[in-house]
Length: 550
Image (cartoon, rainbow, N blue to C red; front, side, top):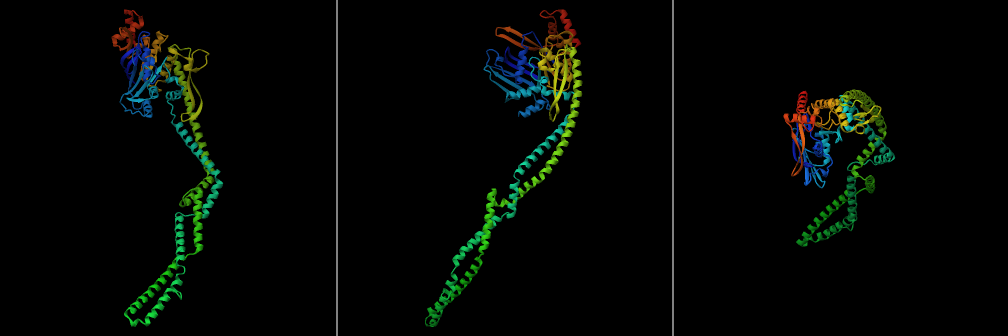
């Protein structure tokens, strides 16, 4: 609900602060007083196109601020969340727009800068403007289906759930088909690769183990080459051990002749013993280092085969076994894919049948609601001097979706025999506003913006028609805030809040102001609307009767 509108330096308005209440509010004044300026200002705050011509002459910039009461469940709250604007339930929502004389503009939501498109998105759910300035609300066919559903209290949740199941299964089926097609293209390669890996049967960690065995055997071979001939060098007939023993025997014959010889003999005995032990150790080492060349060849061959296969598949050697399992799974998918696809196709067919049934029931409910809405609107047209007009809710097939398979559009024919068409093409001006009013009254609680503005809805009518318009506006204002620009005293008399727009001329130029009228001022203004420039006592009496009747 619009609570406050602050306007600064817009056309003929220097500074204006207006407080608004709930229910029906009317704006009256002489032709040319500046009612359109007020609507243009509000439109600016709601994201309308920025026109530098709105800046008051001699000023650098204009600014408009609109304050709204916004309940937590209001549709605008979703738009705020999507735009990333923080909003606290219970706090006022403030929209602001500044406009420079050079055409530049800035938009603000809740004190934070925002694109003008965000203002438009939020504003479309806050305010509907009907009349010359109308560009949204009931004139937009995109919202007609939702309005019809709300009018008929039609529950679309079953259709939405059925469509969600269809969408899920369709996506799953497409994924299965794509996977099967991709896998089928690789069938030959997969079969060969699985057999190749299975034949080699690599194990995790095998490559490292084989590499260690190969390195050990290669080291043994090198050491064996170094030991070759040592047995002859040490143990042969001419080996070191035999020579040491010969030397010991020769020294032994003269050992008693000198103590040093005895010591030398003892050293040679120890050398013989150590050399014999060395010979034994060398023999045992040679036995330990001995290897089978055939085993080395087999080890190297398998190691090279594993490494070559890993390079071929561009994986680590230890990952070959896991790769084999993965390729086997892909191959199994090909085998099982046709069965899975057939099962999904059956499930999807069942889900589509359930959706079609739910959509058909929904279409039938909409046709029934459309007939009731057409009847309700028809009952509103005659009192509004639109008795020659016909209204219908047109239903046509549309692409299936969560909301069913129906396209809904409100159409009208303004003259007998004339074809039906959209409201924007058939009706215009005050006639359009009255059509909108008839629809709004018929739809009643079917939703829409919390604030509605009707611009000169009573244009070209008076008397009983104007009274009928006023009665319907008052009825509609019980559910929404209404602001009506009017020249009709019958409409003005129905208002809960009355604002007079005035233009004044002074030394500093022409100014437009707006005043909220008290009870006495209201009667005087309605009397002026009844009598013209000269307000008579008779007009005042008639104004009093209108106010009492309201």
